[in-house]
Image (cartoon, rainbow, N blue to C red):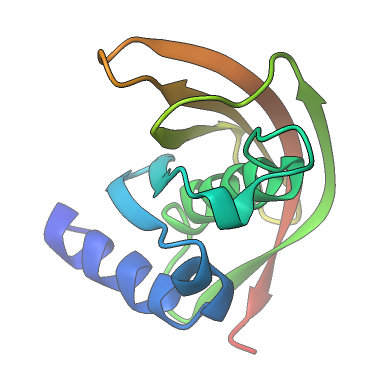
Length: 142
């Protein structure tokens, strides 16, 4: 599938997710087997200590893994997360959260992907805050 067509397909699916609008996330990149999603830091998305909430980090990583997996499927198929494991490595401080995912093993029944969530600071440096591994299953259009 040509890159622009793949990008449009993923962005169309992404646009249907209300939660992504709430957290102001956007697809930064979509390539076969890879996806990057970004969301700005906002005080309304923090936990009690002022860090970006783990739920936001998990959501970004899960979506990035899902779209990385979807990018390898033919049109008309969708993907659902069957299982995920996330490790929170550091407090999420900064101005932008960046979830970068890649497919580790594509499959007809199970796909395994991983994502890292980085926080970019005002000076442009990035700190790894979370790591996820996910198992995804292809499904027909829901």
